[in-house]
Image (cartoon, rainbow over all chains, first blue to last red; front, side, top):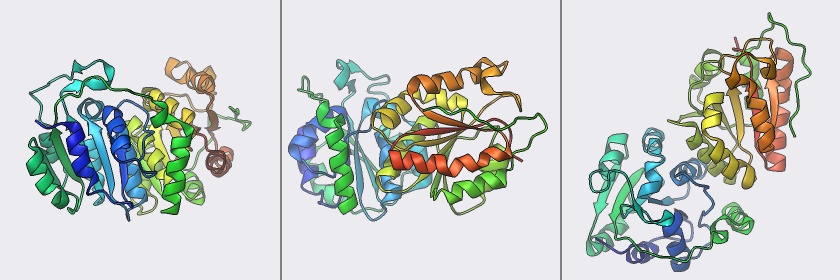
Amino acid sequence: MMRRSDCLKVLARHVTDADIVLPVYSTAFDWIDIRPHPLNYLSHGAMGLASSHALGLALGRPDKRVIVLDGDGSLLMNLGSLVTIGAAAPPNLFHFVCENGTYEANGGHPIPGRDKIDFAGFARAAGYRVVYDFSDLGVFEQQIGAVLSETGPVFADLKISSSGQQERDYSRLHGPHVRKAFRDALTAS
Amino acid sequence: MPSASTAIRTPEGVLNGASIIREIKASRIEFVVSVPDITTSEGLLRPLAQESEPRLIRVCKEDEGVGICAGLSYCGRRSLLLIQQTGLFDSINAIRGVAVEYGLPICMMVGLLEKEPGVPPRQSKRYGVRIVEPVLEAMGITYHEIEAEADVGKIAPAIGTAYAEMRPVVLLVGRRPS
């Protein structure tokens, strides 16, 4: 089991200024502190749609790596997106899932099927080209460079511990200034 | 805001799928994102699927399409979500948050399942048809009825306006295009 913030710090060292990153909910608040950047795409509504926004961005900007940092509860709300992404097969889409077994942003309740379901198995069956499963930070640190060098769609399940309470100012994700900053940065990039 | 069709509707009226596809292409739509809809299945989706442009992205559920179209819009790529009104209803939260509150040009072409040809949606005997326009009005979403060939000319301006003004639009297809 890894700590999410440790995983994100490792990942941040391999993300370039050209990459688009879509972090979800609790991960988003950690990520924007670890790696604030105008190409962080933060406004993806609710109900697990980040992976779908990521597919749109990957199709629209095939010259860029699009990295979505999903949550397990979020992905369960949009499991069909795995099949859609597998079928559309964008080579520039990298789909990470931070699996802590809880709806952390909504009270820490367990997700259905906790400890029984296999997200990497879902992705593999849905047609992702490459699938990883990490539960050891050292292994993740050793392999992340290779993961981000793969031809996508790539899926990586990160087994993390729950982070507990977190300060969440949602205007940092959903404010109009956030979307304008992203749009301007993407247009210029 | 919502606009009602001024076209004369007749039960024997026709709607040409090729005309609609021509308008979609004239609107510079590069991606059609779709869950199959029985009203538009043969006249629109099937011929669109046989062409390389616009690219067809088949999705499992309609709200996925809202997200995909949102991502594409940030890239300056135009898209059309081709769905049924049942999928529109199912996607209301995504449309509320992503299309309306974020102010994104999510363009939706919506087949009206079980609408009687020539009958205005509000006068349909089907509850699932009658409530479509009131729901869109409650959400503040502009819509246009595409019921007859004379309505096809609304498509390109409606999509153009959605992108120019950064807001969603719904095109309600009220009969099966030939």
